[in-house]
Image (cartoon, rainbow, N blue to C red; front, top):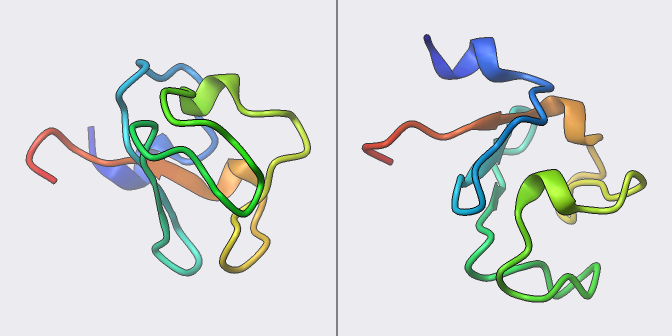
Length: 70
């Protein structure tokens, strides 16, 4: 499955890194999100429903899971 087939998928593992398909910002659960005050260790699937890309304001549906080699 290519990364582009993962747009909008909410079924993620706790350590899956997700990349914005608009601006390429990477949400890394190990780091959390300082802009939205999301603590480290928060999986993408556990983000609040209203969470958006802190860089370009894209919705979660525009994020795709990064492959294992990324």
